[in-house]
Length: 338
Length: 172
Image (cartoon, rainbow over all chains, first blue to last red):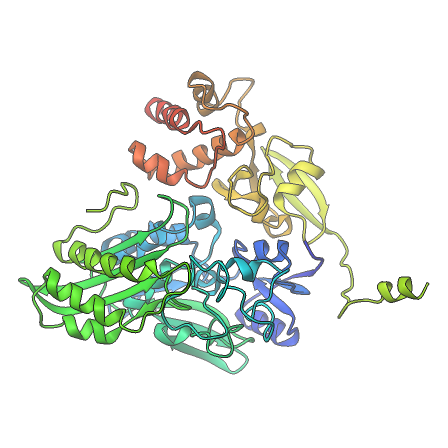
C-alpha cells in the first residue's frame, strides 16, 4: 500500500476543517472499500482523516415519525435495529443482501453511499478508465462488460453503482445530511448520486469539503408490501446483475402508491417515477407489472455482453412487484425465488 | 547516468513519511504496545509485529475471510482494517480461543466434523463462527450458510463446516 499520513478528527467541525485544508486527503470510517482501492493503487490519498470515533453512531426517531441514522452506524447494526426491522424491513433486507457479515460489521452507513464502482477496468490501473483517470477513455464500452450498466450510460462510462442499501434508500425517499465549509445542508437521495455524463470521475454531488453526517428516512416504510430481490452469479456475497427494490401501498388489490428502483443497471440506483405513476390506481396484477417494467426499461441499451440484463430486469421487476403485492418478500437466507 | 537520475526524480508530490504511531491493542487478553506505520493493517500487525501467525492472509482484499478476527467482539476482515484505527481495542484471534488448554467448542466441533482439508481458511472460519454465534442471528442451516458467506473454503469443506457450527450452536 502507498504511504500516507494519518490524523484523527476530533469533531465534525474539525473534520470539515481538516479536509478543506488538505485537498488530497480522504476521510476514512469503515475503510472496507477505500483500503482495498488503496492497495490496488486506484485511490492515492496523501493523508487519511479518521472520522470513525466521531459521535455519529446513533439511530433516532424524528418528530415526523421517521428515523435519523448517524453516518457511522455500521451496516449490520442498521439492518438489525428493531425499528428498522419493524418499519423499514426493505432497508434491512437490502443491507443483508450485500457484502459479508464481516464487511457489514465494518462498513458505515455514510461510506456505503460513497463506495466506488466495482468495474474491473476502474480497478485495473493498466487500462484506460475515465472514472479513474478522466480523459483516458473507457475500456468497458468495447471490453468485457457483462456486469455493466444498461440505463443512463454515456460514451465515457458504463459503470454501475454497487450498493444494495442505496437501492432501498432511493425508494424510501431518504435525505442525506451533510456538513461542509459552507455549513449544513440536506440532499434528496435522488440528487445524491449522479449519472456519468462527461464527468464520470464524480460519483455523487457531495462537495469535496463535505462530510455525510446522517441519513433521514420519512415515516412511510412500506413494511407490509415490499421486497428486495437480488439476482447474482452466486447465491451470496456477490454484486448484483440486477436487483429490484419494490414498495407498494395497497387498498384491496388496487395500488395506491408504488415505488420501484433497480440496482446493478446504472451509475446510480435507478428509480423511475413514470413507471411508478403507471402503477398508481391500477390493479396489482401481472399485466400491469409487465407494463411498468416495459416503461422503466424503455430506454435500456445493452452492450456486447450485458444485453441479457434487459430481459432479466424485466422479469425481476415483475417478480419483485408480485412478491411485494402478495406480502411475501424475498428471503435473504433461503434464496429460492417464489 | 542520465537515465538513472531521471528515474530518481520524484513522480508528482512527495509526502513526508510519518513517524510510526504508538498504539495499544489488547490481544487475546494481553496488552500489546506497538509502534505501527499508518498503513500497517491489523492483519500485518498481528502476524508480523506480534508473531500471531494463526490469522491468515489469503486475498488481502476482504474477499476470502481467512483474516477474520474479532475486534471488540465483532468479526471483521483484519486485512481491510488499519491497526492505528483500532488503538485501545480488544482483539481475539484463533490463538486466544482455547482456555487453559481446552479447545473452544467450535475448534472441537471442526475436528469432530473434519471441517477442513488444507486448513488455511480454518482460523478465519472459526473466528467468523464465534462472531456468528455471538450475533445470534443464524438458527437454520440456510442462515448459517448465508452469514458465513464471507469465508471461502477452496477445498470445499462447506457441508462439514456448517455441521460443525450447528454442533457448537446446539451445545451452547
